[in-house]
Image (cartoon, rainbow, N blue to C red; front, side, top):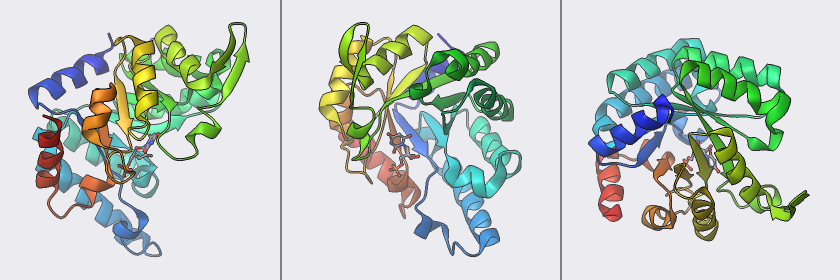
Length: 259
Ligand code: BMP
């Protein structure tokens, strides 16, 4: 078990919530895209307020490039990470690490040393000279690595859903990736909440040993309860909460629907 896995499991239990809040507004919501300082201020204030307002209803917070690019890792993101930590929540950086080892290592070091508890990486690049560097840096710091196994968007079958031919014969990429997650000691896998049959198959392959994080709830059409029933342990929700006029009520509605 990694520090991250224990931490998120405990917070989810204490707060009775499987929700991972993704601080991801749509472009329109963030403000006038031509006024960068206005966008930066909006995103920072909204994110800090949202964490303060909803932290007792969450299992974790996930940050993606919606915030990292405009606010800067060692700028506004540090402020947000401080707020996340003060609230006692674990943090996940969704950088979908996807490069050669040396580049991956730098990406992992920066994010982890900035304070993130877990990183998301793409298993398509493989182990040797690829994700081995990410797992090394994470293990050294007792941080988590979460692997993309099947994405939530409509084109996911073009990549994650393709057949591959290896020494074990013809197999689906997402099943190979689920096995890699077990082999490499990942702290979690991402499987779209929009893909219920695939969620179930991946859950069976993992045998409950690694938690499934399911994005795609709400804005992308995924149903939280069905995703949970199919095997998702954590539900990642972005725009539905971020853009809600009453985020606490929106979260409570989702949580009630899960019971
Ligand atoms: P939203 O709830 O607003 O659709 O946001 C979902 C979040 O999860 C986004 O950060 C997106 O990049 C991420 N995500 C996803 O939607 N599907 C995947 O398969 C993998 C993801 O990381």
